[in-house]
Length: 478
Ligand code: SAH
Image (cartoon, rainbow, N blue to C red):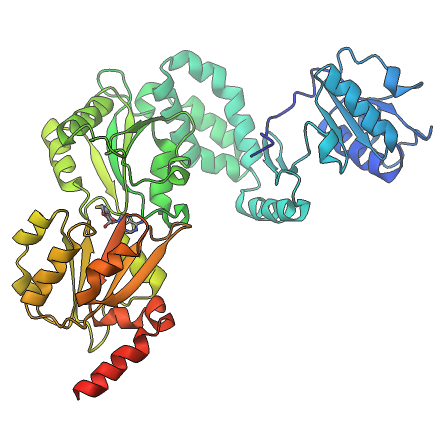
């Protein structure tokens, strides 16, 4: 991001516009309609403002003389449109005194640029592409226009009018936020969006105890809770809508090392972010400490999110955490996520079950060779069973030996799928006897192993010449 969207207070002073022709007039219309005061140097001397509403035109001050020697005191921004070389010189002047300046279609001389705008009164959405493509910005804008209820601006205005009064009655910040969430998400918000403002007003006035409405506990604090959220395998688009909502409502997020930064960025901006997973070369803080942190956060009235890679209940220790929360009497809920094995299957086209070929799926973990020793491989002999192995990179040789000893064919297709759904995802496919060599081809984890005939249907398998090789072996065996 090169350009940070910020909002300029048009009441703070005039905007200086330098330029002429249709380009300058387009900016005049935009600024005037937004309510700006404009000091306009028309570089061709033509100050015609026809086509601009009289009330807006009244805020346009016609400036004479050379803009390059104009008094810049009190000016809040400088804009050049259709100003030719004067624009470049004006930009240097503005920069010298630290004023934000935009020279139309000239990124090199601009310190700010105009976003595409969705304007719903008090609700304004700015869309930018860093100047790269106004067309893309406009398309994004169209989508936002379509998604936002028409009355959203009225809702913001409505709340704005009540803010002070409620601030007074609910001094505690967290509780006040819940109050407004309940207003916005509940019947009062719906009334405003339907244009029934008087009824909304009456309903809000009717709330005799705003703290109770906000869900205050007997302690007077907001009710704290913990939400275990599955963050999916890495691609932020694979978050569920519920997961997004939990992240947006969170006061604090305890996250694992598997959670990608892009996903963490979907959390509410003011939420504290606490890493609790293992970091490269460093141990984690331990399960007991994580449980304690979650319990403390909830007891202090916070909404904590425990964000985990994949699904919380698939090799995620979610079960233990829920038990600790239950014992502590802390309210909790669980939002499932897309587990790595399922995501790998989708990305690389491995049907985990397939009529006649794979009738069962087993998810197992083999973190260390020691774990692999404790697996009862004899339950995995069925060649119509797909085996998905989590944390299996280091123990791959034991996984292979276990399955071979249990009688699975050395020719069973296997896939190693690393960093699935991330931009640098990687696959390596082959046969069971070659599993350790397949792991060698993977740059780094995390990686999931899928073992079973269905891997022969996967995209990487079809793209490799293994397809021919294996059918050759099958023919030879017959
Ligand atoms: N709860 C997680 C699993 C955590 S155990 C889930 O449901 O996905 C950690 C193991 O998950 C890793 O060792 C690896 O086997 C697997 N894993 C997690 N994210 C992955 C990814 N993006 N690509 C491949 N494997 C992944």
